[in-house]
Length: 87
Image 1 (cartoon, rainbow, N blue to C red):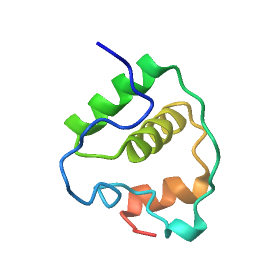
Image 2 (image 1 turned 90 degrees about the vertical axis):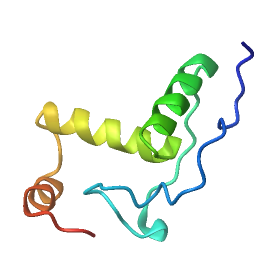
Image 3 (image 1 turned 180 degrees about the vertical axis):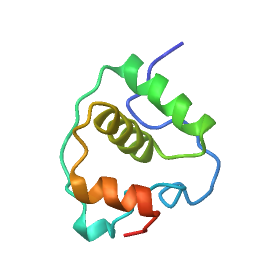
């Protein structure tokens, strides 16, 4: 199977607004370039599609989960998560 650097086909839905506690207006989100091994990207893309998320939302979800489990999630984010606030 050939690896592609572009996203695989994902069902047409609003992936960005999935049930998450880290929603911010796009203009407030930090943008940066992320280089990934093509096989890692393909695995992330498949997982994201299975969860009906974009690859970006899947990466953000996984990073948020890892930070929370490591006790490194910023206090404001922890408060929002426990109170169920949407930003």
